Image (cartoon, rainbow, N blue to C red; front, side):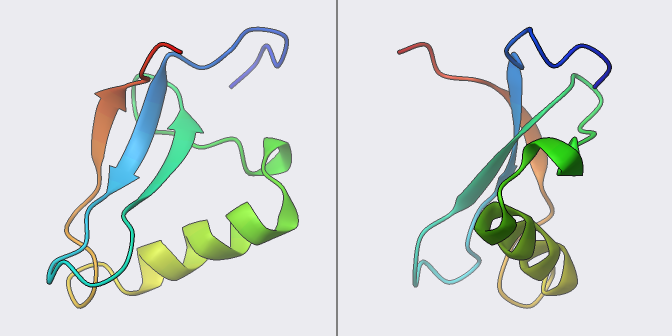
Length: 69
């Protein structure tokens, strides 16, 4: 994401395959690209973990609109 002053309108959402534990979501652009530099250390580790176990613990990620607060 090029402009960090704007809030992302999308999240990359990883759903659990077996319903054990929480799903994970990360801010992204409309194409599903996550700005790793904008993530904190824990979120970055969770993102890499979710990608590594996609197909075993998490379903393929989907790009979803970010919920408005």
